[in-house]
Length: 299
Image 1 (cartoon, rainbow, N blue to C red):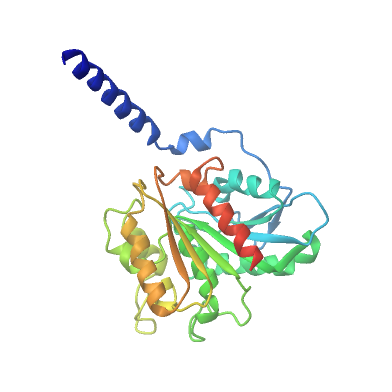
Image 2 (image 1 turned 30 degrees about the horizontal axis):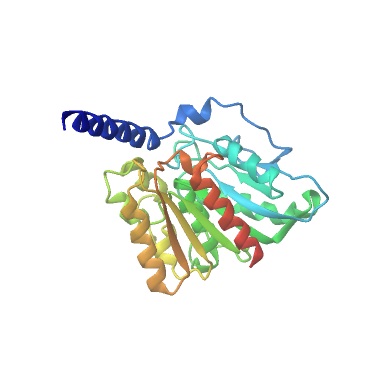
């Protein structure tokens, strides 16, 4: 009996060790210290340093289906820029999909915040259409993919047709988004501002939305995605079960709002996945995202 107990204890210890190893999460340095692939071209859509788009083109003549990619970093340029997405952009390029990887001024840069950050992502998105012929891009098949704060901005870009004409962010003919995928996103700015456990903190939201004024008393009306629902664009939310930066309730909460509005929205909860895995090309989360992108292009 003693030998059995010792064997059982050893077996349980090994299983515990294996389970712990299986759930080890990627760190930012795990990703950022890799050799960084490069795009074929960079397009300027403004005079500022971060008003750029990197273009990733697969082999062939096109026209290519396009992923419009939006990086995160808590809406702050000092935390991340578009190069954070290079590894998954390169992976999509190898799979035959073009990538329009946009950058924008964060709230910590002159001109960022409201309305500058939103104007930047709008102008960068619309520049896809004006450059489509040059790069052989099929702008009739655009899937927006955003990570973290970029998940909010990707969903917001899909919602632009719902902006009121009274908003300074209104544009008459915004680029049409066929499908949007949010990777650990923060689409509900009000919920994020009320969630001190989110990795971006709460103060950044006020810097992003700007201060209320008598002329603009509701700062969330044209900035927070739930206020623009339904957006009439299919939405997939990919969230890690072990994400320590974005609480899962921010995904489930937005899902409830989107589905109640009548939008088609699905939450994909990925086991053994944190925040970095969502943009790591070898991860289960990215494999699921690539499947969703392929399916979206077939629709």
